[in-house]
Image (cartoon, rainbow, N blue to C red; front, side, top):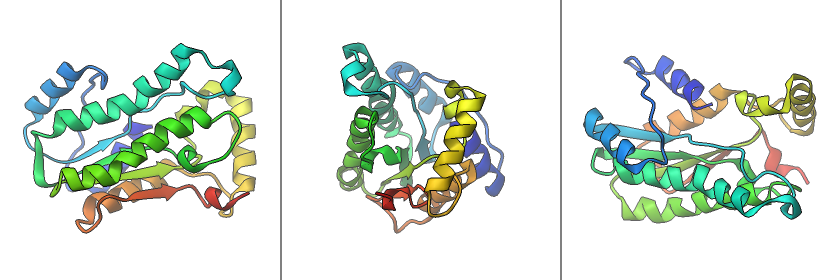
Length: 204
């Protein structure tokens, strides 16, 4: 998911996009990465994981802990590690998920994790100013995140999701990339969570 977002942004930017691999849960490795990079203007964090999905009655303590450790913690540790490298006019953009505001069975823990991440945005926007802090909250996007379902189940799910949305389709990576580009380029936007869900939040 993240690599496709970065490619889309790179296609519209003036220079090439270079990729480097680092475990976002490894604070030392992440800090070392930013030391190698030098000054960074804009940081987009797209760390994600599936841990936490399912009915509460079936979730183990390890699953619950993993949901926090695989998304909330890496986002915040990556932002922290980048603070010394970010330029004063730069920005941090978290990529959360529309589950933060959804009321559906089996996603309560995902909602908790993404909701917690969205909740830090206004406070960090004030704390880290003039660095801008925003979040982009995607709904159902057709990416490899759904591959775990298997081809047939994935196709059925995405078809059903598309039929339920006011826009009549599920999202594409470029839909999210366009929103990320907006908050990165607009220097008058900070402390904001932008939802990109095809109107899913409007459905009962």
